[in-house]
Image (cartoon, rainbow, N blue to C red; front, side, top):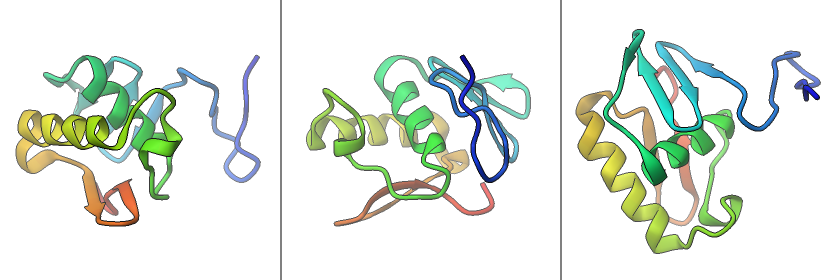
Length: 102
């Protein structure tokens, strides 16, 4: 069954393709400008969850089974793998979110 956003009518089902600017994300698969990115496992799932947040802050409370320290570790791995292209921002006390214009 497909879950549609009531505002934009996009598919928001678990596992649905998410497109954010030059990024396309599936659980476990991240593409930037059509090129597969070197990100797998937990960091890939964290980036997917942050993209699903649609600009809202995402914390470890939004990711079942992931603690605060584990999410911080995954964010570091995202930054390490993607460098300047990292589309995520972090605000202490708020969480992680997809950067505007990324």
